[in-house]
Image (tube, rainbow over all chains, first blue to last red; front, top):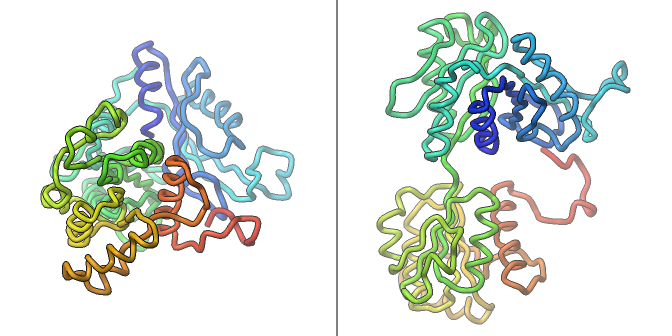
Amino acid sequence: MKELLNDVDRWKKQGKDIAVARVVDLDGSGPRLPGAAMAVSSDGEVAGSVSGGCVEGAVVAEALDVIESRDRRMVTFGYSDDEAFAVGLTCGGTIHLFIEPLDW
Amino acid sequence: MADTPIFDTLRDAIEAEAPVALATVTDGPGRGEKLLVLPDHDSMGSLGNADLDRVVERDMLGELAAGRTGIRHYGAEGQAREEVVAVFIESFAPPPQMVIFGAVDFTAALVKVSKFLGYRVTVCDARPVFATPQRFPTADAVVVDWPDRLLKEIGDSLGERDAVAVLTHDAKFDVPAITSALQTDVGYIGVMGSRRTHDDRTGRLVDAGVGPDGLERLRSPIGLDLGGRTPEETAISIVAEIIALHTGRSVQALRDTDGPIHR
């Protein structure tokens, strides 16, 4: 969270809407522990990270959708047979993200 | 942009390096509701139920003290052994401390890598010519004093996550620094010096009343056996030793081991 603060402050001053994605749980091996956080502005600017770069692109898309819909959600990224072509973590684990608008 | 009172308070606490914990309902009724807890302050926000707030606040203080972050489950009114509400409790503990005795070339490099790893860094040396903020611009504090006097002042704040590095390799500074560090609960005490300096110093420490348990606590000579020579390489070997101590690892290369990389 700490590494996001400056960017988030700047976006707030510029009147942008913001979504925050946080790793809340982890199954198996994962690059970042619970608490790792990423913020996305309504202009698509990004601060922080939630993995080793494996899923950040997909998180930006989800976050922009959250900003639009104001709808908080859990999102899971991982590898399984039926989503073999979806975005996943190269290290084989599963991460659970909570993505929500910064309205608190 | 909406008002963000909880986020603003969280940001101020993190920037002030004050301990703070944030709880968010991630599943169940009231998803997204928040409770912010600062020890010795009134809490902010609510998870939607006063009983749930009370139970979660108590758990948050415990998690914060342990520096833990994760999901816990409760009943709608905070009951244990129920899974109606999932609450993500995030602890923002103040940064760990690195206290470096001796304002030498190795110190400058160790200050840099310690800051990189997120430590709050204090440099202490009794010689005012060497212990200057200009020589260690990224240190959080540069103190001109004797090690034992500094530790008398801040020793109680040192715990398992903190580190003391004694880089003076001068017995007249080393011995009081080590004996006072041993009286704290600091998790790591590393002491620089050649094997010969180490042997000589061990004798002096025994003369000063340090017993086998105390000597066993010392990482002396300091650092992992990486084979580096420069101050920067030495600094890496010191912080690598601290990481390995915390994780309890054997410090082999990954290519010579198997099993998952993250555990």
